[in-house]
Image (cartoon, rainbow, N blue to C red; front, side, top):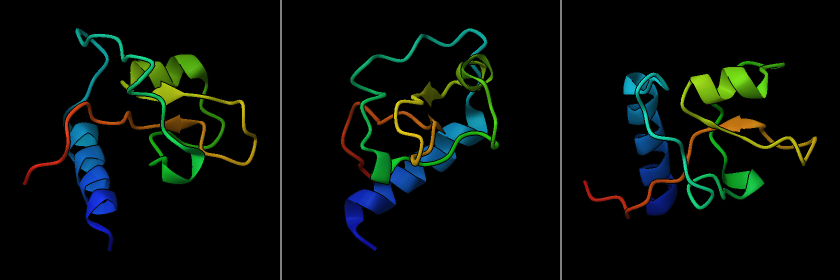
Amino acid sequence: MDYKVFCLFAIALIVGSFSSAHGQAALTQSQCNVQPVARVNCGEPGITSDQCFNKGCCFDSSDPNAIWCFYARPDDECVL
């Protein structure tokens, strides 16, 4: 597996296990600027934008064939 993809997946799993939108700062546009093919699913099918944001994730329904609710891109490069 490509190192960058592995880092993105690892960070998404970590963030998903700890994340809650309650008390969490809003995500930035750059954090949610994730190419459709690189998105890691953060919600169930049919999730609304409000439900997605409440989970601390990004929402973009502009591409009907892509994942709409997805984990944000980390600001920093992965260092394990």
